[in-house]
Image 1 (spheres, rainbow, N blue to C red):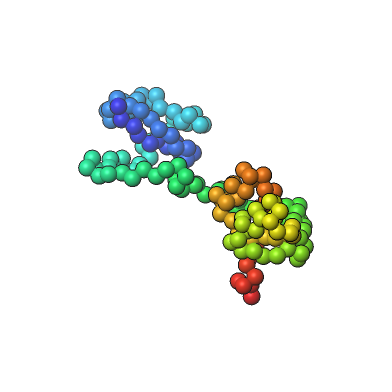
Image 2: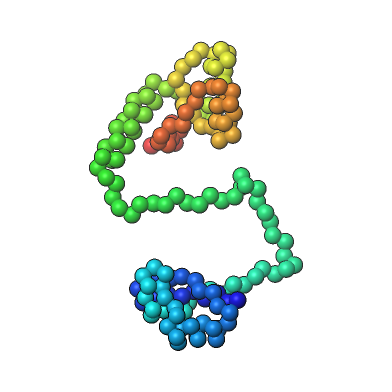
Length: 159
């Protein structure tokens, strides 16, 4: 079997599987090929990258699932609707107001939050940084924490 990338005149691309190159040419000559998207009979081979297998003597490193790269989130190429802009601005304003009475504890966030939860220090509004593992551990312990919707710069990093 041989696989060809095919395209119609409308620009739709699709794969075609054939017994041989001659089989493709024969089906094309008899008008048996058609685009599955639009039904056009004007189909031709599309440029395709060759499949080059890896050398058999090379060791391939397999990453654990936690280290696998995550695909980028798709981004819109259109302006944000005014309602969304307004909602985000209101959310940013609420966060800024809440942080006025909160103390920055930096990377000691998990430690300080845990101390408050277990009564080792007085409760007070704090904010800081925690790794994903630290945040998960806090949640598993029943410590009430939540991420902030917008990033917060440490006080020593502000202009």
